[in-house]
Amino acid sequence: MINYGYACINLELRKQKITTNRGMIRRTFDAKGLPYVSEIAIKNITDQLKIVQWNIENGISVYRMSGSLFPWMSEYEFSELPEYDTIKSILAETGKLAMDNGQRLSFHPGQFCVLCSPTPKTVDNAIIELDRHSQIMDMMGLPISPAAKINIHVGGAYGDKESALKRWCKNFKRLEPNTQKRLVVENDDKASMYSVQDLYEGVHKVIGIPITFDYYHHKFCTGGLTEEEALKLAASTWPKDIRPCTHYSESRRYEQKLMMEQICERNDIPFKALEETPDEWPTLSNHLKEFKKTKEQAHSDYILEKPDCYGLDIDCVVEAKAKEQSIINFIN
DNA sequence: ATAGGTCAAGCGAGG
DNA sequence: CCTCGCTTGACCTAT
View 1 (tube, chains in turn yellow, brown, green):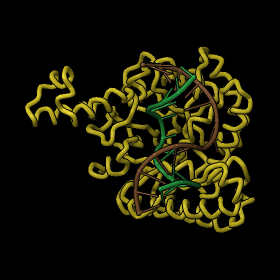
View 2 (view 1 turned 120 degrees about the vertical axis):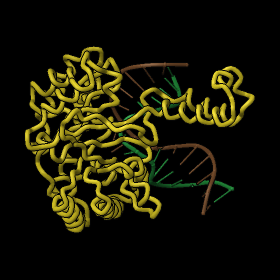
View 3 (view 1 turned 90 degrees about the vertical axis):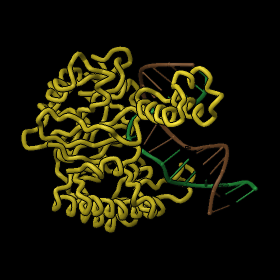
View 4 (view 1 turned 45 degrees about the vertical axis):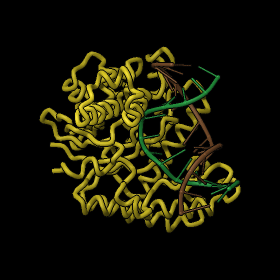
């Protein structure tokens, strides 16, 4: 059985200006300082509470929180914010509401969190950033386990995956204890990067943390395993009492191609003819141009299929541009 | 009010 | 060298 979820943005609520991504550029941060950060953060976490409520009301139990709740959060301690008490109380209320209603909340910090970077400063930044994410979860009273996961990628290979993995595991020890207990690692979408197999050998066996299986990434980096094998290997790394978490998305190119084919069919244009003389159909040729620019790894707006859980009980964050709209019609 | 230029951080792929 | 894609476009200024 699969519990479906989505990431960060709720399109329905965004129409009402409910969003958790408010931020500021460096210049504004320098000019206005922590009082303004505090103000923005309170707006973000207040809206996050509304999203959690919406999820409960709409039968969605898996949600990835935005990593942009607190602008520039690596630059200060939360306790320095002028409205720290208010912040703590909103977060605690959100966490309690989530826990009372069987919600699973997680984070997916940015691509800048590279624990294996050869640049010491980059590693320092990654550690602060990850610890901050964990501290937010602490303020929310979320589990100190991968039930409240903080998910990242290894982040770099540098032409030598083995030593990068060693650095990653070594630097892992520098994280705060609660961060270590929540951190999980995800397979990559490039053949040169880290497959589930790589992560199993190089991370799970060494430091014991679980692997998030990303279905779509696996297609680009199988490590010699089938989807079923990779999912089951990843699932085996989770504690027995915690549902393995997965990510699912589909190809934007496939979706674009499908759309072009449908337009072609409706207008009696052979698809081949479009490719040969696109200028005859300006609208379609724009679609074709967009299609050609799209990378293989880009995500679709919606998903057309459901992931196969091969009989396992798992949670699955659907990464589609249409967010909650992409899953709302087939939960349960 | 909206459009357009701009904006912290890392990495790898493709042009 | 540049741009894109990835966790998630949003901020700010000029018009």
